[in-house]
Image (tube, rainbow, N blue to C red; front, side, top):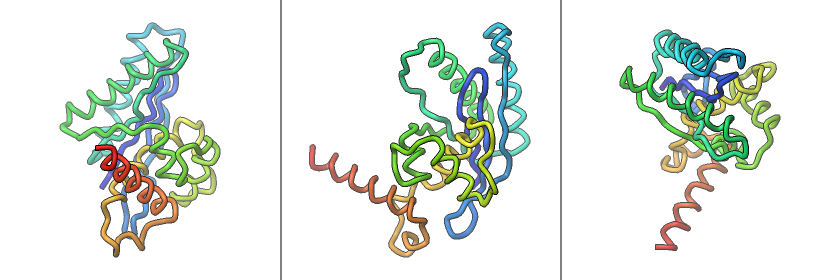
Length: 190
């Protein structure tokens, strides 16, 4: 499976592509950042990011696009730009009939580090470690896009059979256990 991860942002939009490989591992295909100048009008900025996302989609032909789910922040202008870029990424995928998956920051952190409250540096170190890189991609938006793609690759970890479970990394096992616990809690409440 090939996943294109998008860390939406109006100034810097992280884009990362990873492939799944045998043994529930991930391989880096490409990583980068689409940038737009804060001096340009919003429509021009969105068009620039849209064009770059289109290029990435056409060049790498992903099986799925994983996008960070936009959440409320105190800064309304930041969340609006982020939401607009997330919408552009969804549209780029829909035009190509590529499924879209949305993941929250805590889901991504849990998938990559085993802890939903992990710090940015820890996520970046784990992304580098998982992909066998000497250092985390810069800027952080690029590493975050890769973390989103990895998260999606490992997302079904909670439904693996026992034989597959032994091939998971410690972070994957911890995340699978957390998913199972959350499902059990939901069942108890109903």
